[in-house]
Structures are given as structure tokens and as C-alpha cells.
Image 1 (cartoon, rainbow, N blue to C red):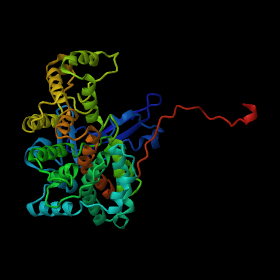
Image 2: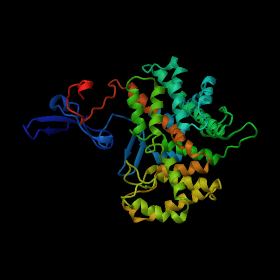
Image 3: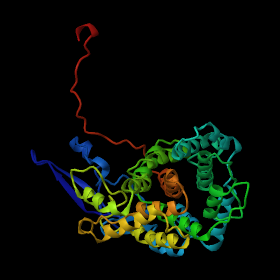
Image 4: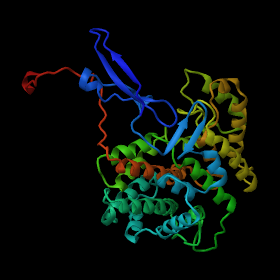
Length: 431
């Protein structure tokens, strides 16, 4: 804890309020404003929480200026090169990389929890045939609290661990069921012989009438995408999970809230928006026209998948995923897709255009992930669902961290009220 303080001085009467400064391991220090209201009757005002630390966390660190992303201190590029999604999941949940026996035990636990209750599976028959998969995902995850209520004591560390393994294991099964329902195909059960991502592909694309062969390139691409999307500090959906969970609600409801937040087009829906944008552009010869529109401040058109609110340099995840994107397109033979060719041409133009270079508007992780999902034949309505599968690990890690914090309090932001002053009720006949 730093002993440094900032003095807030009232310019009217000279009153000084000392505010403690807290230092983290990395990144900017924070000013503890807990005394501000009690001593000065003031709240802070920070729309969008651009400069507000909402909590203390040991999980993920981002330096947007330098393009750094660390999971529990490990650079994401090292994990992407050497690790696997389940190993990263263990790291985020428990704080350290697992030993060989620990990793095998974790994998076995996740594998043995992939089945979902048959009654839960039948829920999908109640959804309309063209319901958005994210709507189904949010609804079914929320309903899981009705099936596993015997292990939902948030104050029981063992129960929290069981929940973590269950939700990470079952979400791919639920996601695949949502996809199969939207396609009008029979549900496919998980296979314990398959690894996490291969199992997901099997549940997505296998049909009873023929054998489905899993392409290792596709499975490896998914594993990489899931590593890169596993956590991203206090983003909107993670903050939603923390805020919902701070009330003491069951963890399935908190995760369902996070899924709903992720569904927003400004958050997890960005990769779906990228494909919509490419379809709007239509062909490579129209790219210059739309690039000029994106530069025009008076035009509402925006190039989706470029730039990032946090990263003021190149998104470190985008550097990694870009290589995988080109590998997938080359090895799966999907270079004949006009939409994918269009995306690659747009990438080329943007990386060479001074307007984008000066503003650090480089293609981000959402731009490339959408292209990879498209190459894997995953429909764009499922893009955000895939994001949710990966990000659930981060949500659970943050939820566990918050619940285990002895200083935990229910989240209760304040506001700047700008409505009417006090006024008296006027009877209906006098209005």
C-alpha cells in the first residue's frame, strides 16, 4: 500500500481532504475516493467508467498504450503459442499454470461434466425456430439454477468449484444445441474421447446419417480463439457479472447476465457486425468508396473491427489471430470465398492508409475472428455464442475472486441527478 496522498482542496474555503493513493503491481495507481462523500458531500462523475477502477483484481492486466495483455502475469502471446485453452482456463481460475497431474485432473473433470440434463435439453423445443442463439444461450444458462440448486451455496468454496467446472464444460453443449435447433437438426451428444474444441465441432457439425471427421486445423484455430477471448479485464460483460454477483445471486444467473451484456453489438456482437459490414460493401471494387465514407465525420458508416477502446496501439490478440486467420484460409481451402477475399483486401488497404495508421485504427481481434468463424462454416448468428464460450472462463474467475473477497459489498453506483426539483402532487382536476 502506498503512503502517497493527494489533497483535494476546496477553492472556496480552502478545506483539504487527503485522499490515499493505492499502487498496483502494474499500471496507473488509483485514488481512493471513499472519504469524498463523507467529508465533502461530493460524488465523482465518470460516464462509461473511463478512468474508474471498480475493483481490485489479480487476474488480467492490460496496457492499452503499449499493446500488452497479461493473464495472471503471463503474456497472451506466450500462452497462445505454447498453451491450450483448458490450461489457460486453469490458470485464470486458480492463479498458476497447472502441473501435469493437475491439468489432467482438470481436463477429466471438464470432460465428465459436458452432458446436460435431458429436461434442460428439451427446453430448446420451446424456442421459436428462428430465435437468436444468444437468446437461447442466455435463457438456458439462467435456467441451470433450477437443476443444480444443491451446489449453489456461494459461500461454499467446494460449491463454487463445482459450478466453475460445470459451466465451462456444459456451455459448448448448450451452444451446440442452440445451433442444432436453429438448423432443424437433431441434437448431438458430447463425446468424452474428444478434446474440448474437437468436441464442440463434433456437436456442431455431426449428423446421425454419416461420420464426421474433425479437421485438426479447425480445432486448433478454435482453441487459439478461445485463449485470446478468455478474459479481458473489466469489460462490460465481466463488470455485469461482478455487479449481478455482488447481490449474492446464484452464479448461473450472474453468468446469464454477462451473456446478455456480451450480446450487445458494441461488445461481443462486433465480430458479427464485421461480417454484416463486409456484406454491405459487397465487392472489392467498392472498398475505396466505403473507406472514404468511414473517413467522413458526417457519415454514420463505420468500418467495424478496426481500432479498440482500450488499445491505442495494435491489439496484441490481433497480431496472433491474424497469422492463424491466414493459416486457416490457406489450409482449409476457403480462399475462393468472395467475402473472405473482400476482408483480406480491406485489411490490406487499411494497413496502408495514412488515415488509419495515424489514428491506430488497425484491424482488431473481432475483425479476424469473424473471418475464421466464417471459414469454419460457423454462421454469423453463432459468432457471439463462440465468444461467450471462451469468455465464460474469465467471468467465472472474476466471480470467484469477488465472492471470496472478505471486503465484498453489493455494487451500488451513484448518479448526477438532473431531473425536476422537488414539486408537489397536483390533483387530476387541477392539471
